[in-house]
Length: 174
Image (cartoon, rainbow, N blue to C red; front, side):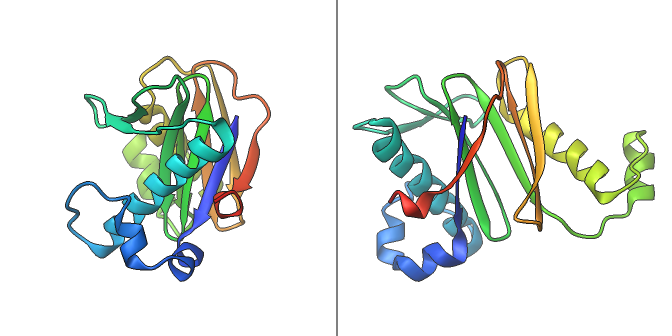
């Protein structure tokens, strides 16, 4: 499985808003959402073309809002938090969630979820697993969790085996 990411601030410094707008096909309510959406579409389409030789990476939206490639069997999933937009790619359904790590009321969350969270890592492992699992329309048979760039926590889930994971900066392939 390959995971590609983009730092939003680096992307915005490299490309002007006119270029970025080419990746937005709907009206979005906020500037923040505009950039998350556009960068996510740029990331997925660029990686599909350059790394997987998909000539036309047209994206369709399935019933529950899940984006998929129209003409290929390559599966992907996108997540974003603070300055990171990230996507995983595999031959099988996969889900990813990334969260910026910040202080949380672990006592309150433990009570609410009926699960004892001993640390922020415990909470974020639970939360990102829950969010990544929601995004996949298949049984989850494997998962991988880690801290990413020390300020983020991420989880990847798959209905097969997650296997070896490569983390790659998508701007280096664009």
